[in-house]
Image (cartoon, rainbow, N blue to C red; front, side):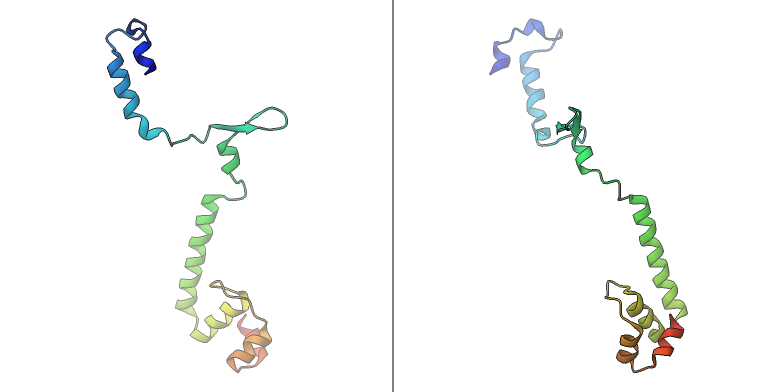
Amino acid sequence: MILQDVCCNCFHKGCSANEILMYLRSQKRYNNEISLNECVGTDQEGNDITLFDVVWDETEDVIEEVDVKLRIRKMYRKMKDVLQKREQQILIWRYGLNNQKAKTQNEIASDLGISRSYVSERV
């Protein structure tokens, strides 16, 4: 091993080669960990590109995403409290809520057996 060949006098006073080996072995579990600040390459101008630069997406704002999800949940609760089942279904189909495909007023009217004007009044 390399440390056996190194003179112990070059290490801090009181630190033996054995203690250093023990420390290095204890750090093995961190060998597979990397830092977001680690350089993964360079751009055309020679600037370092870090892993953070590659992973970061400015279009996604976590706070905004959480806020939107909370508002959507609140809207669904209000819909259930205020609207009748048929009115809820009309809104869900018309605007494609609950990950459903949005439908036209004519499609909704046909599916529910009601007039298009009734659908129009509800949306």
